[in-house]
Image (tube, rainbow, N blue to C red; front, top):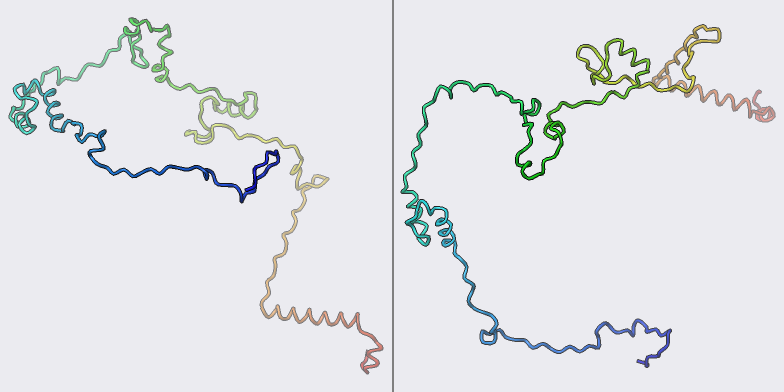
Length: 264
């Protein structure tokens, strides 16, 4: 290759450019055979892991230490299971029914310390009083009390000055009752039909003349008469004869007819 020139516009063609790392020499890494004598850093002994039986014995010794105090935690699981099976089950006796249990319980009496709506105590929690986290918020503002209250709907957005609403109100319709229009079941829409403003005069006074008399409606268009095959062929022959007659009238020459010996 020519020597490199220290010019600013020096450019090396693409075919002369060498790949990345082409001039770097790498030393060969010799292959090392694995042997127990050379690998002194590794240990052949595996770390001891607790077996499943020892874990189970330790768990049973903790749980059943009161019932099986004589059994050692290192005893096999089969012996401990046999000892648990040999323990007789505890007998349970039910008390005879009393008259108070048979009789219906008295109705709960709500004290003054409980709210009539949410049945929660009105007094503050003593735990909050001890910790000093109690707030001065009233009971009516709590979330539990607000959930038990009946939902209050906002009033209707209809304009009270509209003539249609006043007309319906005279017949007993209440816009704030959230009930539809209609008979005893009040099935129907909750709101009256919305009117649409008419900015043109189309359709006003239709069917009247200038004197105010009613205009007769136009007669319906005649029905299209359908032809059969015979009538269609006859119509085609008539149209062909009519065409020939018109051509003779416009393009016929008396001199040509006299020359041909035909009468005009």
